Image (cartoon, rainbow, N blue to C red):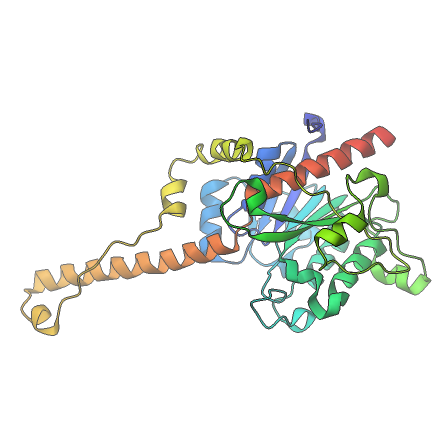
Length: 336
């Protein structure tokens, strides 16, 4: 059973690139965390976040995240950062320009890490992140985490492992630290020549990196200066629906949300010919134009809905990651 964090230890969370809130729904399933601010630039996703979480402020642009901007929206404390950063720069379906892609926000993410100085962070992305630029991009991510004083675990979890009918593999990265180096800028360490902290937690993991490499050959090979480890694979692929039930409990508190988010059909609209339009009275023509405008609005919303769902984090997968993080934090409390 997952060890629970006590109420006084509820972790305050900053949710970056929030989308429609799948990451935050994941910790609502797991428990022990509270999102104190979202960061999301898409207006459709902002509407859903306002509907789902009306009391949580939204900062639209990740470039605007500072301690001052967080303070202005009422956020006084951040224990951890979660981020579902844009995946097109690393997706196997795209050009995979990685660091050369303007949509790559890892630079801003680490800027936020240095500014906010959280105790931990979780990042989600596509498996192509592991092999982008010959795996050098992923190595640079690990280096930046370790240079800030964080230990890092990572692994691939699929939606199928939590009972979905599709695969939808995603890379999950957990960075955590109690080190006094946490929050010190990366430049200070590279300039001073300090060695990077080790990546991974050794015996804290349920499986070794050697077994993970056999299961996932896409993982980068070990570097002489950095110890790599990976998240243990989930064991909940038995078809049980504990996490789905937990998610239902979250959504049922917002009865107006499900039809808006989950509707998959568009009402039909019978277009009239030019001759038929010409035969309409002025009142009928006005009504026809109004109906057509409403139909077009529904189509636009449907397009945004499908895009948002396609980019969304699977909450049940995120819940597994938060459960793992809670075990890490609980162990740190025991050791402190």
